Every structure is written in C-alpha cells, then in structure tokens.
Image 1 (cartoon, rainbow, N blue to C red):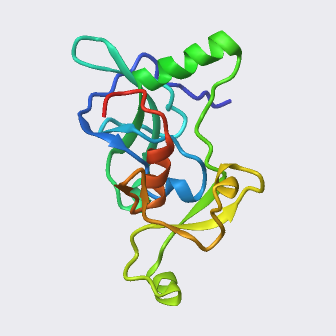
Image 2 (cartoon, rainbow, N blue to C red):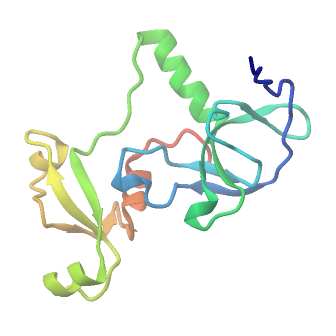
Image 3 (cartoon, one colour):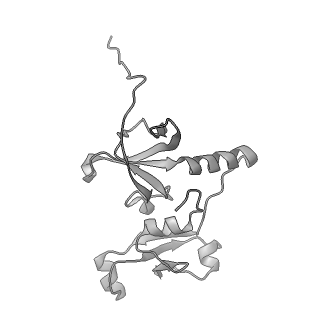
Length: 173
C-alpha cells in the first residue's frame, strides 16, 4: 500500500505586483472576478482559497487563480482583495445572497478578422456576442454585433475592461 503524504503547515512568500487586475481572457469564459491583486506567490491547483497576508500578518486577500506556465506565465497568481471578500461575506450573512453586477450580455474579443469584417479601425472595444432577452443590455437597446468602446466615458478596450467597469467598487481604485 502506498501512502500519499500531504504537505501541511506550509507558507509561500511573494510580492503583490499589481492592483486592479483582471485575469487575461477570463471574460470570454465566465463572469470572472475583477479588481484582483496580482502576485508572484505560488498558487497551484487545489490550493486556492488560502489567506494572503501582508508583512504585519493582516489578511489582505484570498488566493483565487493562477495562469499556468503552459500559457507563458511564470508565477502569476491572482487574489481577491479582502475588502471584496468582506463585502460578499457580509451580504451572505445579512441576506443569504450576494449581489453582483449583471449587464445581460456576452462580451467578445474583437480580432483583426472581426475588425476587418465590421469595418472597424482596430481591435479595441468589446463585441456584443449575445444579449439576454429582457436583461439590462436588451432594455438599453444593445444588440448582438454592437461594439462597446466606452462605459461612463471610460475606454473599454477588452472584455475584461468591460467586466471591470460594471463591477461595484469594493476596494479603493
């Protein structure tokens, strides 16, 4: 019989290397978390959800995701800021539910081919791939094939920019 030994009571050191980040490409597959902290601390499959602490031992975030080396990244992880975690936990505690922004559309990347077919000057912006019938985007008159280039006057260059623009601010930007 082979025994598998787990590593217990381990700690990883790292640096928070960026604030207000989104996981590149994540908006194409899900309504992914936005306004994340980027870190070089090791985050591996199965160990997300751990506390991220500063040098004073204060929890500043919860490890959430990483970009694997196969995708060209080395030690690139993302954590949910503590303020976001506390906001969601508070909502769950008070009402049993957490509210999140919902635009009612599926954002897509504008590739060079799409830009050429639509006669766009470049690839910046968000292609509306699908709209939820009766949802906020539908009620606002947004239709599949539309291109979103700004939200509230702020440029929206990628689907991740779009998701970030619709998320409530729970940490200081």
